[in-house]
Length: 139
Image 1 (cartoon, one colour):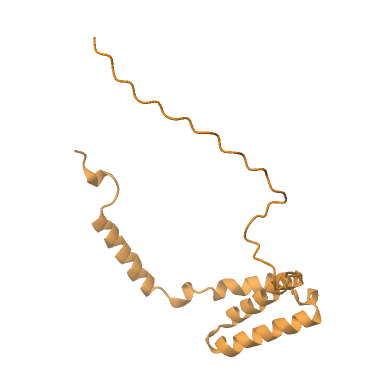
Image 2 (cartoon, helix red, strand yellow; image 1 turned 120 degrees about the vertical axis):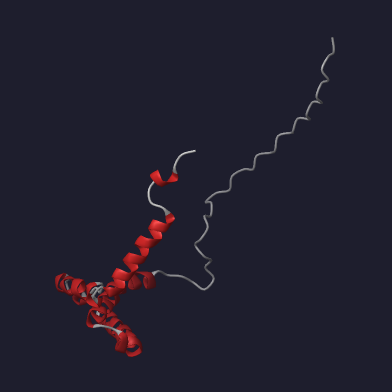
């Protein structure tokens, strides 16, 4: 049989390396893994979408943002608050398009395909009766 140690690392070596990586990650500075330093340049590059919204939509966006901040504001960083403002503003135009779609109370779900015309059902062919197995001829 072949030697299993030639095919990569053993389970023990893998566990040892995983433990070292885990220990190193816990000793790393906390601000190294946060997205504050990455999110700050991104917010400066993004254009302001508030001019594209109607006044009613802007009021709705502001009220949505205020309700989120009232509930979770103490736990959010400045970068997270800016991200929530951006996401709420970007989500408003699709919401308006969805609300503009007319639907009635009796409309069914649009989860299935409905054929435009019925096809004629083919009659089932008559099934042939199976032939009995013939017995082998003896010499």
